[in-house]
Amino acid sequence: MSATQAASDDVLIARIAQGDRLAMQVLYGRHHVRVFRFGLRLVRDERVAEDLISEVFLDVWRQAGKFEGRSAVSTWLLAITRFKALSALRRRKDVELDDEAANAIEDSSDDPEVAVQKKDTSAALRKCLTALTPEHREIVDLVYYHEQSVEEVAEIVGIPENTVKTRLFYARKKLAELLKAAGIERGWP
Amino acid sequence: MMAASKKMLDQEPSGIEMLLPWHAAGTLNARDARRVDEALARDPELARQYAVIREEYAETIDLNESLGAPSARAMAKLFAAIDGEPARKPRASLNISARIASFFARLSPRTLAWSASLGAVVLLLQAGIIGAVLVKNQTASYQTASLNTNEPITRALGPEAPPRALVRFAPEARIAEITALLDNYQASVVDGAKGGMFRLQFGDRAMSKDEFAGLMSKLQSERIVSLAVATP
Image (cartoon, rainbow over all chains, first blue to last red):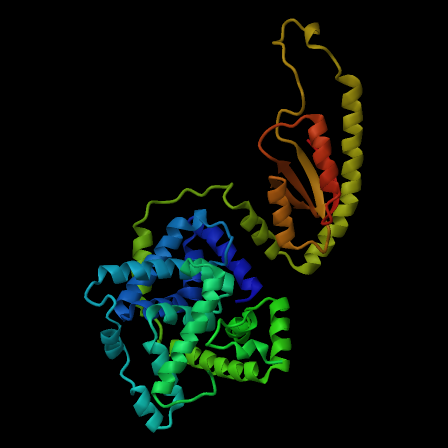
């Protein structure tokens, strides 16, 4: 995100704090897709993810006056999303911690082995990204897709910066192991 | 030198090695990015790992982009909920920094430049007038409380209202610097930008003459302040 957009987001939040509905629409239009995708990767249910973004932006509407601008608005949104997603997961006991079942529901693409047989390494890599644990998946998404810095990830996840770095390193190592098990060698590790 | 990548996996990864994903995403600061670039140039093993990371990076983006977007239901639900919220009374004092940023953002660079030039002229005129008023007041208003027995006895240690000043910011001053300055001085803009000048109010209490003089002296020495003069 550019510095200009970040400053503009701050202005929108200030207007939202004054009750400006149009500013809310602009902020929503700017961020809702990324919020949805981050939430969906965490809860793995489109309907729940849609409910999630309504809750996230409603929180923004209510809390805008307390936003102090210490972090980027996008970082704040992702932190709220993560908190709401974890709460939703705790409520949905039937799917909580059942990653294998969730994988089967969410992803109908080929298994990594089958994808390799089809010489589609990209598909295998995507499949393995989906098979990571929620902890590893979230950190990979935050760094690669949501372009969050070390400091911002630390703030969103609530862990020290050094833990952010090592957690991503081991997420990548796990990804390499999954790919290797599927017959894909990439030269690292 | 392959020290960074030789540590891989069997030992703790090196600091540079752990920064590679952020380098791929372009979110490192300039200093760290330069350190990583230098390490990549001299360490082929590290460069190989970086190529793998770039592949992961691209596939993660593809995967997320394939997730689609939420339906209109989410937005409808949100704004229905907002409509159900209690009406909010606008508060003028809320987030002054954002209001200042919004104000400056609406001005074009040319407008700002003209305002600054015009402000210099207006400032000289205003400074003259203010100076004349102060001199006049000093000679005419000295009196003791005991002279007037009909009025309650009071002591005027300084201006009753919070002190104010007219300030012109340097043309190269950035919005973030101005808002930081306002925060540092607990100042708010009460009027502006007429002729490029802003009327600032400091704090929410009166100050003694010495206290205000010290504040003005400090303000005038700020890099982003071209001119500052006390005003009623």
